[in-house]
Image (cartoon, rainbow, N blue to C red; front, side, top):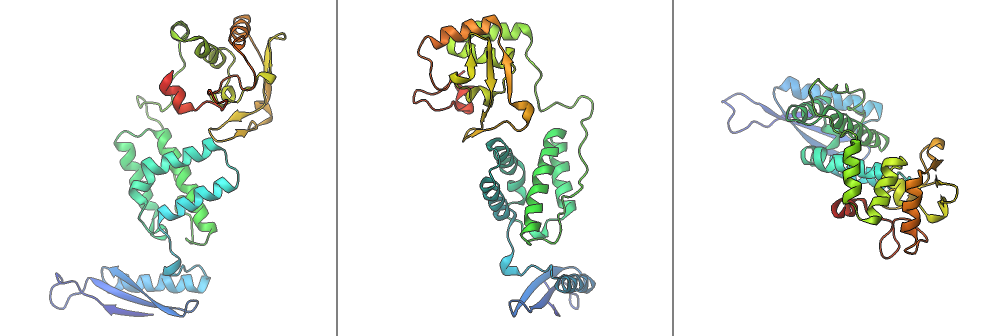
Length: 290
């Protein structure tokens, strides 16, 4: 390696605050140049770090380095190939789009330090981002940087063992509370017939929205007063429940049975709730329309 002076125009005569560290990469058989701000001792410390990485075989050639945005894109594609649930992928993408990519997107992933992530999280928390959301950001950053480590793009995961944020008294919760009985009655009174059935299943049968969107009439036993939950709709495809307990038989109240009978009289077959073309409902469209 070689260290050369590269003074700035603003440096006083005889002083130097910028250095060029030239590294010979035996793998690519090419020289790679690095700029180090500070004193010569800083450049020498950087030089030692690179020598140690070369000796350990953890040095990443400049041509192979990726930005955080590039690694995140590859991470999402990898998770899609591995069959991750649509909800999980959407969660990753929302955190990336809102909190990580606007700040870290153009950064070289190997140059992100633990202190940089902590600083970003503290800024978000101080400006009103909830502790729960900050912890989601930590999980997403940790997963992406571990993926980068597996791809040999970084020599360690700097998000590993980041301390979780604790909700302080008075801090808003990301999740809203449950509806009161009066609120549920008001919703049902204002709902149209097909909406009333869906709201009833969510409120009184305990179905998750994805389970209701995936419900087929073949899984509904009106005579026996029950329905079977065997799958869920994640916005892209049907999925089996995550756990064995998720696949279950749910009892129906007499009111729900009658509502379902009336609703099915309009021609029930296939999905209980669907679009005019017979496809599962879109969660975003449903929130907008209902």
